[in-house]
Image 1 (cartoon, helix red, strand yellow):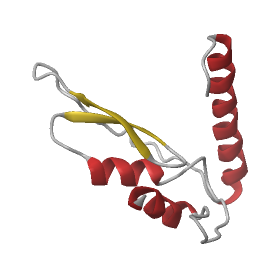
Image 2 (image 1 turned 135 degrees about the vertical axis):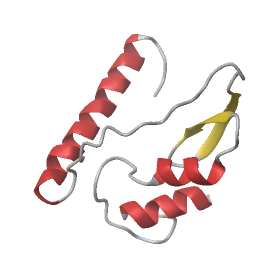
Image 3 (image 1 turned 90 degrees about the vertical axis):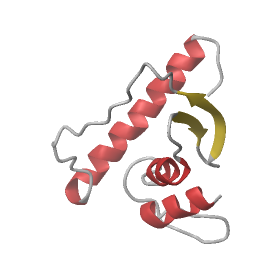
Image 4 (image 1 turned 180 degrees about the horizontal axis):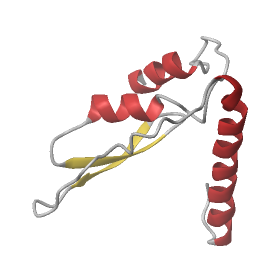
Length: 107
């Protein structure tokens, strides 16, 4: 619950009785806070969101290396770009639901 609360502070969404106003993206901040605060060496964790909950931990095999890199490209998603960014996020969500339905699985 703490991870979801911290995400809502960043993205402006409502949390429990605290009313917010949705801003940029889908659940901006929720994933970041959860990943940072729940990280463990040698583990990946699968979470679902709204509400935030751990689905399962996955041990990274010792012979593999997990690498994180940045492209260095600025992601414009505020100001006059916010509507386009949110539209793209909603379209990606719709694509995922459509694919899941075509495979016979629930969202």
